[in-house]
Length: 163
Image (cartoon, rainbow, N blue to C red):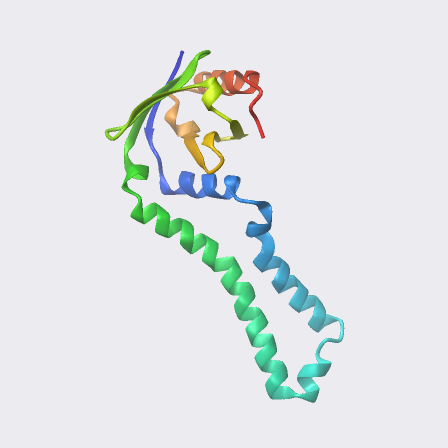
């Protein structure tokens, strides 16, 4: 049995959100911005020069939309972090051959591996999904040593849940 304990930090929560989000959400604003720049760089100035007011308005709307798509997801993550008290609770738990234990001041649960539907593992973070949109966030900082982290990583990999 591998024990862990800690309190989630905002930076760890942000990373968990980006790991769990479809990649297109991370890049769509930058893709739109790149398309606007490429259009302008390859002669797309024609409409702006022919109709300065309308062309400038369209360009400004495109840039504003791209910026919105870059900023909005980050602001949404910050809002959830600030408005969800459960994310700020201290966690004690364990990972064993039989189950994953999770205890906070509000909950005390043990999830058998048959209840964990998938896992995402990164260098410093595990996400163990108990449903398609709900995961236990277990960052490396919860473990007392590198050997405990490596043992937990090996056990999760052995369960063949990784997505």
